[in-house]
Image (cartoon, rainbow, N blue to C red; front, side):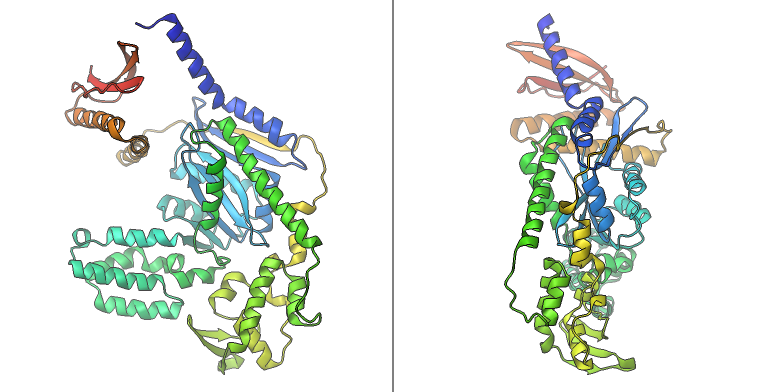
Length: 524
């Protein structure tokens, strides 16, 4: 028996949940707390809804994010973190690296579906608000084909994907069953591919590849050539550094930021709580960085170098982060042996392989990754009798002057009105899906179900698995299944049918009454 009080409590609970995750409330909070009161603010908030006004995606970027990306667009990485929101939306973060080697958030997005259309919408919003969107040399993400296709439309630069994800994929795909090879051939192939993954240069990779082709089975070679050989510059350790990845070969920067978010933001937070605590983390990080920057500028350091030396010149010309890298290279250049090459070039042997060196170019990983002078270039300068200090050898992004010009710690606060952009966009009506598209939609929904099942153990886990088995068995028999919600109050259990059909039925699942609310499938 359900009393009027029960109905009132249920309605109040639903109203509270709706308010916590209300789009109207979220936008209002954004305007009041993070738009009107933010200094010199440009705050872009873009909301995507469907025809029924259900949230499909959300994009936001404040002035600090906007300034950071447009000042330092060369390197971007993207990843999503989960379980933060009560409405189960993944939180997508785009992150770049500034001239001090610090991580800067470029934008944030919430997506209901992680399909091509949603990711494309997110990237297009980012492009529309940032004039530097074509400039990334490197876009780092995981090996998700949907993300790769969308990112390819974003930037024609290099992709870098997470190294560990490739090694895991090799182990998963190269098996005795899938490729029809023996256990010994599998072990040998995986060892060879791991050597390819750690190749330090293009020459080293080509040499290892020739050995791999001559020794591996034909099915493994076909698999490798069809899936990996043509994109070797995206995942081979040495080749990735050619792209200008600023020495980033993993997503550790984003993982660190996501870890800080999870320390402050409770799991299953409402939209309103998420926004507030997200800015607690972001503001704390920014204040810490501003303090660190100003402290370094005011600090009088004791120089161990001669004021007229190249070391002192680089230290005054570059940020402390970039200067540390350059000074380390200068301390090692005397150990470099250069041999004369063709057309006035030099040849240097290192653990990476053979490098071609001139007074302003080197094929080593450090120089191509950081766009800063390496030990080989310094050795060439010494042999040619050229001053070791040369501003042309350093990318502008690493200079102290550029850093101060784009560091918001030095901005003058200016209050302005009506400087925010809040846009709502209604997604087009859903089309009639093909068989392939319907399968993709089903996979999205069932992957979410798998997440819900995996959150519990013991009796609750078995209960949820039994419900899924009952649903699967009923559908397989061509039946129509509906959901019965059983509400337990004291010793009274009342069943109410939810008018929500799933597509099959007649085989009721075994009911385990262990929670206050239980679901079971039954026939109509």
